[in-house]
Image (spheres, rainbow over the protein chains, first blue to last red):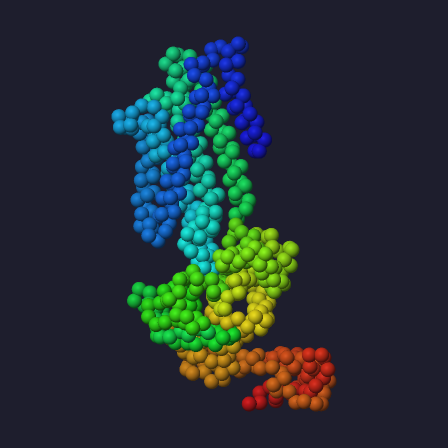
Length: 232
Length: 308
């Protein structure tokens, strides 16, 4: 798995930078915008949406697992589920009139779509902390904040990371639809290819998106394995 | 050391602890004993404010616990529970260092304290410091749990059925270690159990609780010989009170100095129950008694065992 991630990563980088050279042997190659620029824009949107979703998701999960927030657990999970059942394309259609074209509605759609797996697994992770461990931590004199930071969050991390991994991987694929509202993504060659009836553009975009998602997924898998090794 | 005064606690209208008053002397090993639901764990957990009181006051070392911040109070009091609750993502050394670090001890002092405690529990520091809890046996986990409870050098140690989940052989070993550590450190210990044998073996005084009230508060031998009520008689005796008295008294208390008897001598430090066991096994009604060095110092006869 370690080597698979490395080789696929190298392949992805080589294709991003070297695709134009393929034009000599197998034209046409998409060239309106460089693949590197498309990737950076794509990654920036996924990154912004995912960081926001992780922050909001973990904050919500912490809140609903405290005594004060326990009553909101059902509502938060229901809202997060609605966020995910709502198709991202519909979110885009609704968001564009409100905040205009470009990357911003895409980030909003990705954020809403990515929240559920994070909230869900973060709650599950926090709830797997054994009652005895919590009891011992409080009984030894840790404050609620210390229990959260030193005991609960580290123990919840491997489970929550699995949710973040799912969320980010899905966001990488979903971000391509941002191109329909004018955001630059690796989906842009796909749309242009469909519009101009140029199949190679579609394939080039699709391969790069798929590689991006797979490499990210494998990277998270390694991080998860490392976390789990220390917290059994 | 601990003064519990008119303390009550109810859950949903049901009184779990009912106007309980109790004093635990400094250096005592006080066992709270009783059937499930008698309020013994609740009482223990009220001492370190893990459970809030409905009424009454508790003083620890003269301080009213209600006047102290819960975290500050708990760092003064060791706490060990049946399910241990070691932090699974921390090594043994980090687990033991929990309270010293909360107290802000310098790093060197924390490290020295961790090794000192591992030594006290006969766990080789070089071998055990770096292990994770899941790499330990049940008995080792419980030792580390008690070591963690003692690490901040607390004035008082609370133990809630700490040995109930380990096998009988390990339990006996852990009880022996607790007695040794209690003798060595003279810490005040409050120990909750429902196991009468464990209570008799460990306690300097036993508080028997019945329905949240104090049924009797006395040293183990008094409890067996002068039960205050039928409930106490039934709970501590259960048909075996006479034999239990034998296991509480030592051969040294009943032996006749001088003289000797055939066969392997029995150590004066052993219990009368051990002497009876030896007599039954050897079909002998008199045994030679030896001191700690192994020299014969007298005899004990079957009749001596039952003498008033």
